Each structure stands twice: as C-alpha cells, then as structure tokens.
Amino acid sequence: QVQVVESGGGLVQAGGSLRLSCAASGSIFSTMGWYRQAPGNQRELVATITSGGFRYYADSVKGRFGISRDNAKNTIYLQMSSLKPEDTAVYYCRADSSTGRRWGQGTQVTVSS
Image (cartoon, rainbow, N blue to C red; front, side):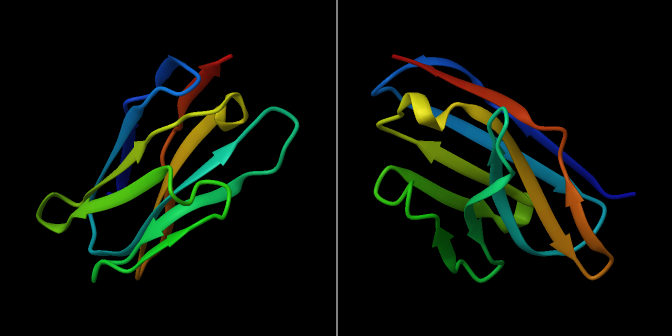
C-alpha cells in the first residue's frame, strides 16, 4: 500500500526558515514534489525533483526554497528560507509511481508578518 506522509510545518515569522519532510513508501517513485494551497486559492506547484535529481521550482520560490531527495529513504525535503506571509498555505507532498499519483495529508505552514 502506497503511503505519503509529510511533516515539519508550523508557525514562523517573516524572514524565517522551515524544513518540510515527506516520506513515501509502498512503491518505486519517479518524480516527487511539493504543492501548496492557500485559502480560496487553487493548489499550486512549488517544487519537484526526479529520481535522477532534476529539480524544478515555481518562479515565486526560486532562490528561497530548496528541494532535495534521499532515494534510499524515498524521502524528499523542502528547505524554505526568507519566508513571506504569502507563503502561508497547506503544503502537500505528491509522489508519482507506475501505479499513479499519491498525495499526502498536508502540513500547515503559517508565516506571520
């Protein structure tokens, strides 16, 4: 059974940093990534990383966020720095495999001004 579990959200002041983790299990995963959804908004892509280490970032987070991956653990990380109030959202992890896409339950990130 495929499982995707996020952790590491919380409350931080503007300019601060947070690190999110996402552990996936039950399959072999190709691309894994982070998405976010703020109240009243659609879910949007934040960053993705392939099993080979190719990274993609949304323009809004380039230079501030870094995605990394430990293939042995099927785990990805999102290091977020210089956080802004507009980064406030529920952050979701998605793991893609030959059997489909799996989403985690989400973790709340709140950035206070």
